[in-house]
Structure formats: structure tokens, C-alpha cells
Length: 188
Ligand SMILES: NC(=O)c1ccc[n+]([C@@H]2O[C@H](COP(=O)([O-])OP(=O)(O)OC[C@H]3O[C@@H](n4cnc5c(N)ncnc54)[C@H](OP(=O)(O)O)[C@@H]3O)[C@@H](O)[C@H]2O)c1
View 1: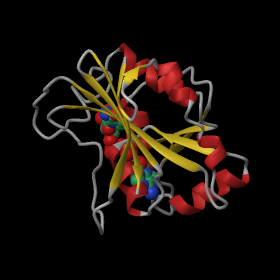
View 2: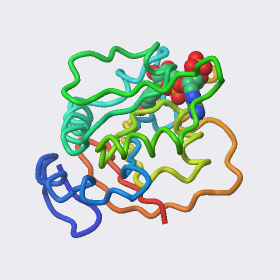
View 3: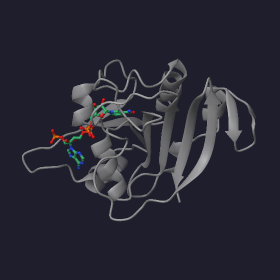
View 4: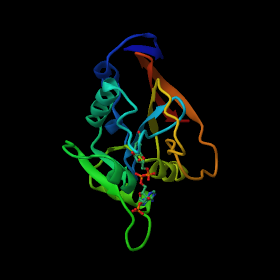
């Protein structure tokens, strides 16, 4: 794998993630929060209703490596319904509406921090991503761009929902292997 930015040169998933220590960045009132998504070049976050066919084996290795850097993994109810989630060696938090409606995300993150969660990897989906960004609760966004076009009617993009303001991002790193791009964006 090649690192295109910063410091161009060869690297591996392990070497790259070795420098990434989100548990050391926790906030007082919430864990450090990173999102992870894979998308096609035409911006689709699903193929046939699931994310599996988008990324390569290297994308899977990146996701598995990323999980190991975090205390817990979080997903929305829609992702839980669509994807297979089993055998995770991290605590899994599923965000689903209760009798009182949608989950209050700042309250949830505060309670997770109080329980000792220093860093949280949110693996989607697009609706939960939109809600977290709208509330200013996302620090990093890992985005794999697979070199493929999927077309389709109206599959979701990596973020769905309204944002009051455009969220400016900084490209923290960009990696490439076999035409697949692995970007890490940080909130400015
Ligand atoms: N390409 C990728 O990397 C990737 C990653 C993840 C998912 N996906 C795909 O995304 C699709 C699912 O998308 P989605 O947007 O429906 O799923 P989602 O974001 O995982 O789940 C959204 C659901 O979470 C629940 N929820 C409860 N409180 C919430 C809050 N405060 N904010 C937001 N949501 C809250 C609601 O469900 P209830 O009201 O039912 O409780 C809501 O409909 C699947 O097809 C999956 O394959 C792709």
C-alpha cells in the first residue's frame, strides 16, 4: 500500500494504524468519535442493500485494524438490520429509538464516557452519521473509495439528513492500493 499524503512512501495497514491513538484523545464529556464508511466512485454506500460488496480485503483489514484502536463500536438500528454483526471483540452499541423517540446522542456519549469508553468507532449508517455530524460529535471520518461504479436507484450516501452548516474537513491522510483510496478526514 502507498501513502500518498502526508510523507509519500510505502506503508501497511498495521504501520499506518500504529500511529493512530484515538484513546489518548478522549474528551471530558464524550469519547473521541470516528466514523468509518466505504463508498463507490458514484457515491453509493450500498450495493444491493449492503456495504460488503463495496470494499476489498484491504478495506476489511483496515476496518478490523481500526476496531482494535477503539474501546467500543457503535451502529444505528438500520445498519444492525441490514448487516451481519457477530463475533466482534469490542463492545457493540446499537442506537435504536425507544418509546421516547430517537436517542439523545450527546447524552448517550456522555454516559459512555462515564462508563470508561475513551474512543468510539461508529460504523454507520448514513442516518446516524448525519445526526452525529449535525450535533458536532464526530472527530474523524475514515472513508474508503472503491474503484467501482454501482449505479442503482437511490441507495444512501455516506451521510443522510440535513446539516445546518457545511462541515469543513481536513484530509489527514490518503492511502492507495490497487486503485482503492483510503482517506482519513478530521473535522477542522
Ligand atoms: N457503506 C458503508 O460503509 C455503510 C456503513 C453502514 C451502513 N451502511 C448501509 O446503510 C444502510 C442503513 O442506513 P440507515 O441510515 O437506515 O441506518 P442507521 O444510520 O444505521 O440507522 C438509523 C436508525 O437508527 C435509529 N436511531 C435512533 N436514534 C437515532 C438518532 N439519534 N439518530 C439517528 N438514528 C437514530 C433509528 O431507527 P429506529 O427508529 O428503527 O430505532 C434510525 O432509523 C444499510 O443498507 C447499510 O448496509 C453502509
